[in-house]
Structure formats: structure tokens, C-alpha cells
Image (cartoon, rainbow over all chains, first blue to last red; front, top):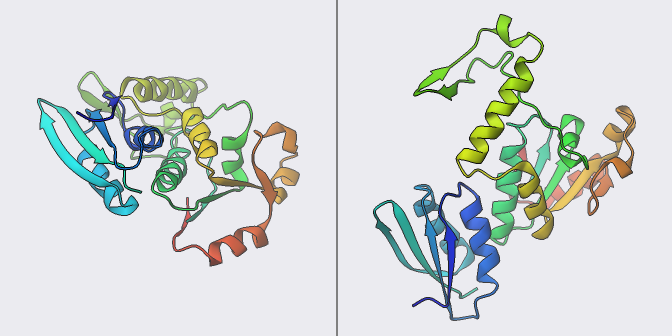
Length: 75
Length: 155
């Protein structure tokens, strides 16, 4: 269970990333943020976002067109 | 990263704002320098339009097809505003951010926004025509920043 969940379904690039960054600030260091999205581009983008910012992408999955990302707030 | 923003139509306003806000979200220091028509994006009251005139690549989705219009139609009065309404509807329908939304995100994420003083003079605009939270500067202000940036784009 993530510490916080962000529903970014229906949003297009770059909104899921921008909202995730904003919401991540509300997650304590070491905590996790779950992001739900429907933008297929977000799969590559969340991976790139985490690699660049140093946050850890714990999970990236797809359940019937809804992408689920779990990000551990590191940086 | 720095971006010189030179265009102020609805479609061309997107790339600098999308890249700028995303880079800021990824921890990058971002400076946007708005010059010539790019200044439209900083106006308090946004009125960005799109035109298909002279843009052979602009094909709008319509009932499962893609519609391109000949220039002789695009030049008629009202066609630009029709295309703008169509584009704004698509933007909303597809969950794409509005320019206002991205601009607010840029301010909130400390993107440095500089309006070109020369353009303000040239087109007779005042600083009060533009949104708060921006700076005024010139080519040297931009250059100082660009020299320190790893990525410098011209859009």
C-alpha cells in the first residue's frame, strides 16, 4: 500500500509527470507514491523521470489500459 | 536549460512550456526567454490562435478521417477562429494541459521567465500587460544564462 495515490487517468503529457512531482513533495522521504495513468507515453516517461531525479521506480505495470507506477521518494 | 520562445500561436506555445515545466519537475534550472511573438504567451489575457494557413502538415481529426484544407479556404475570415475552437476542443478532450495551466505550473516550479525589453518597446507593450512574476531583460541577460546551460533551444 502506497503512502499516497495520484489519479492521473485521462491526463496527457506532461501533466502526469508534473502532478506526480508536485504530489511527491507531500510524501515523506522513504515513502511511496502510487500514480495511476492512462497515457501510454507515461511508461517511458516515469522511468526517465525516476532515473533522472534519483527517485526509485518500484513498480510499473499495466492493468487493462491503466498504468500503475509506484515511486519511492528518495530525492 | 534555456529556451528562446519566439512563437505565440496556440500550437507553438506548447513545446517550450511542456519542456520547461517537465525539466523543472526533473530538477533542472530552466530559463525561458520570450521574444517577438513569444511574448503573447506572457500576456495577462491569453488569446492564442492557431492557423492552418501555410501549414501543409496541419490535419485535424474529423469523424475518423484527417482533414486538411486548401490555403484558399484557410485565408477566409473566420477560418482561423474555427480552427482555434477545434484545437481547443481537442486539447480538452484529450486531457492535454491548457496553456494557462502550463504557464501556472512554470511559475510554481520556479521556471525563470524573461520578457524581451526590445520586443515590448517594438510592439508598444507595457510590463503591466504581462503576468506578474516575470523579469525583463535583453540579449545579454539571455546569453549570461545560456553560457551556463547544458541545453539551449530556440523554438
